[in-house]
Length: 99
Image (cartoon, rainbow, N blue to C red; front, top):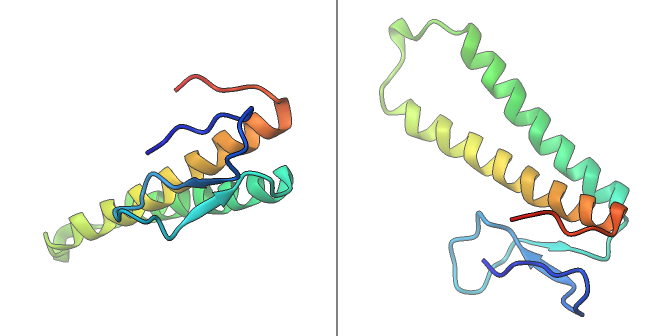
């Protein structure tokens, strides 16, 4: 994935979770930073809620095939949330976070 530089004219940043050559999911780096932050928090909260649910579950009757499905969902939510947080941070503080 190409790194975002806030000092260039590149407006759209592809998410790390895109697996295609033409990324369909992007972050509009010129969107309101509060909106970007809210989108990030929504994904991080969903990931945290899923982890809390898993922590409380008894996997005695669980299917081993569920594990990759759950970890994939957690990865997507968490990585997208982190990508959004990085852009919000850079916009709000006018600072480039270390990679």
